[in-house]
Length: 188
Image (cartoon, one colour):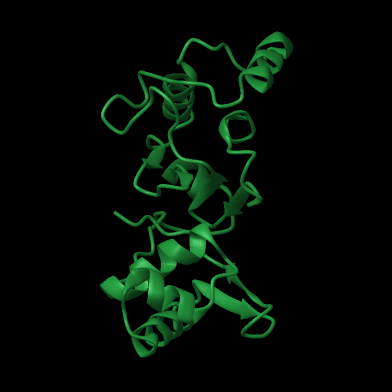
């Protein structure tokens, strides 16, 4: 609900919801807005979409008192989950990661043992390219090179690294295709 309420509707990117064995991730277009910034989040909030926020308040989905994050964290603790992780470094998007509780993970019958976060080690170039692709999935390798001020060869190698780690894949041709995001990464 927060992703719908706080997203940037001037962007044409979708709200992305990913469910993994050990976590869920929600990525929505638009970073922190207005008075909210990384130093005061989550205690200060601002509404990019005031009409939507008011409608959600009337319906009972939100309370509009900057308590949403605290309320979610409290409910996660009651359920045995860790706190939600908010990646505030993505300038054009907002990423929320919630690890599934070990109790729920083990009782789901799908996996035995502890939930493990699969960390992938990527080069700095690959991380920079990944951030650009997240903000514009239609970006070309030459545009990546130009924007990041790296060689086209380095941009090519970074995309190959991301593809080999099953993080992205190319759909369509070089000019009219786009990058499909297969995994959302924390970029901190």
